[in-house]
Image 1 (cartoon, one colour):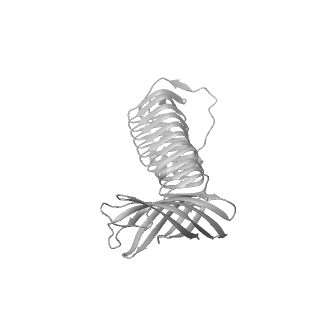
Image 2 (spheres, one colour):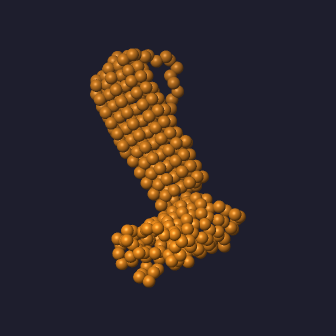
Image 3 (cartoon, rainbow, N blue to C red):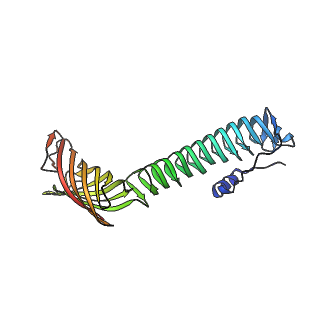
Length: 361
């Protein structure tokens, strides 16, 4: 019996109900293999002459082609549809569809589908969809792995059920459990064992390092942080991430005779627990600070290296204190001095120590 194929219906079925794909066993009978298949369009080709399933070692599809399997090369102008398995190379200007397993390379102008698994590479102009992925998916817009992904996904949006061992790099990365890395503007994961690197990171739990402007870990750290130094610099921010490694995002204010110098504070911290109540931390922060309170165009950068100890008084309250070493690089010709305790000054460079106290809420 001949089969017809509608790419849009197949795409909707793949994205909405990936779990519905049935993985049947290999047929017991020996399949007929032909060295070459030539097709005009799906139901019109050499393979349709036979009353039994045909596996082609090579297939040239003038518009589109439909065979049971490919062991070699399949090239199509518009689309290439394989019922079962493809091993080798499949290329089309439109769509490549494999009903079961692909081993090798799928390259298409629009998209590639390997509904059970791909061991190799999918390169699609818009999207790639597969069950289990062992290898790489490269797409102009969207990659989807309905089962496990081992290897690399690179697109504008990546989505994997499980990243078993690999990396996702995109504007938006989404996955269940992750063992490896997510690198993007926004990363979303379940249990992450590895690294999340982005502007915004979200996870249920992280056994590793989340690095970003804001990292929300459901079983991790989310606290308000207030610090005041002996130079008068006050910072108000949010610490977010794991209990061990966290991101710092906040604002700062340095009161001077000419007014309040406002700034932005970004950084990364690491906590070393001493016991259940006592902890030590190291933090590196930096950001712009106004040199002239009356102008929004005059800024200098202030970088701070902090060491502190703290005491967790209550579940949502900790007090802390420590010392810091601060560095600034002023604008050309600037007379601004963030602190009067400068111990080194050369040209536009200043270094000074400070002491500070703070609380976490």
